[in-house]
Length: 525
Image (cartoon, rainbow, N blue to C red):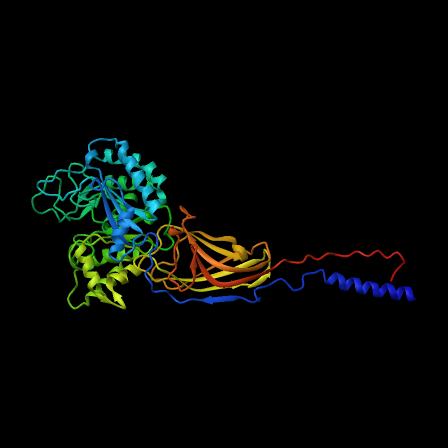
């Protein structure tokens, strides 16, 4: 009897010991404690990749790109830049099919120099560096030469894609601006109703509206093909609408039948519609921006403007001004009107070089807590603000699934038009880091759509300890160069390309249950 009682006591003791081998608390569930951090926006203008003011450079006037000189020139005006528009005038080679090796080497070296300087280029290739007039020297080359030149440039551009923001369609007309096309080459068609007056040697007088035709479409498709993953900006909303109509089998020589803007579902795809952006090189010059829009004020002009306003939500919009001061409708407040137009058309960038008097006008206009120039410096392009970050759970076993939710808002005029990589970083003592990719092709919220929630599930790090959480938005072409990381417009610590999320994760190594087998040699207990 005493033996059985002793055995029973031993059994209870061993069961208690075995229980101590199990995980001390249940696995966290959705009801487990969460950690949340909220943030205020940072109004400081911050340079960011692929947005803001741009400097200009052209070949052959500047035989080699000097990005450091352009950066210093802009900083002397108090405006840091991350973009340079580089235009290559190829008039010397317009009547030959082969580009010289020296030119190809120059383009490659320019891309390398931009990369070393931490900037990106807006590229334009053109053949006519002068205004169309009775004394014009250069006309458009034949289509075959243009396509041959693009095939030769393609490998250089693909190899240096990390230094390219996007391309402007260029190639046709004076300065590659798609007006005054030469009738002999017929790279664009005249628009019925705008053929009055005598014609210069190379076609229409400057700033006339021209329609893309099938030759134009071939040029644009060649540009897109030679530089995959980058957008091509065209000179007017009518041009994009007509290119899409032609690609769908529409007829040449007619005004577009429809203006249907890009939607969120269609955006960021490898399609003609998604990869065509815009550039306006006479912004705010007149009611129609000197032929950028339908000449006559009224419903058709407004249709074109609203089309470009909505379409640029998911593409790119840049350009320059061409008049000393902006056109301001009667009764409008000048600074408020100009700012509203930049926001309406979702400008990502604007030339700081031209028109210089217009830039000085911006700098002289009080606006908000500063000037209109400083407001544009802050708001051109994307301006992502992290409103809130939530981690669930905040305590867990190592390797346990974690839920991270980010509430982001785009406070800028434009959007991110080249994909980024969104990364969650876990950091503990001695700067041990574990990274989890949240999204490989991240574009963030579109401008004007308000706050948006992004939710992800990722495994926690495999080692126990205390981790601080950070957010990194890197560039897939140049992931290790923090100059190409996106910096949030948020009041939070920023170091080494990472934003502090002010969240902490406690990880414990899970204890594994070890079953204990007892042999009873003395019969039943």
